[in-house]
Image 1 (spheres, rainbow, N blue to C red):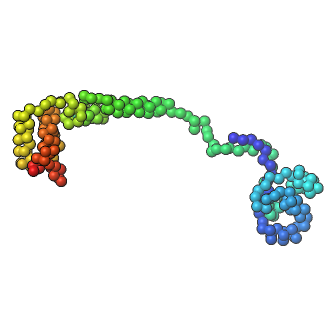
Image 2 (image 1 turned 90 degrees about the vertical axis):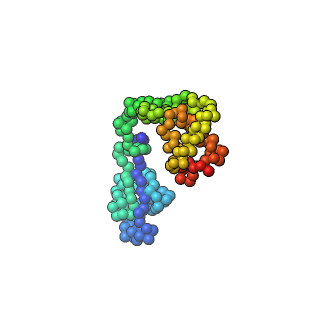
Image 3 (image 1 turned 180 degrees about the vertical axis):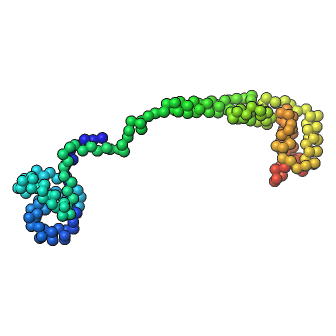
Length: 226
Ligand SMILES: [Zn+2]
């Protein structure tokens, strides 16, 4: 915000041709017009700050008359004359701001900060956790406590890591072949209803059989025997 005394300003608002004609018709204002044009460069095209006292000295006429003639020229639409204001002018350098504009909602701020910290902690826990099932971690974050171990995430696999005996492998393979011979199913569906221990082992068997080219995942996502 700035306080200052704004000087008067003048800009010509007529064309040069019209001005010439005007001068012919109003000879009493000629000194004034010439005085303005000679004293202030650019005044024909742009508003220029003028000082009535300087003009009065230059034209050698009383200040009161200078002001009066400037008013006349303004009224006759030859110039645009903004006379100096009696009081200091106030210029707002930005859009007006009120006290309320600066209110800071600390309650909302701390609430947001707290929620953000909780989210970061949850992500952090998810990353460093090595025992709890990943699906369970995610479900718990969304307040779902019902979910069971998925049996196939890295944590489930680490926790359940047990060797599969040959007999177990053969039994699981036999069971799998009979399921896929019977009906078309994707691996996820076959694994869905198994216990987490069986899920882990059957998943291993499926992956092994796929790697060995004994079964494959068909285009429709179902497991098929080759
Ligand atoms: Zn899991």
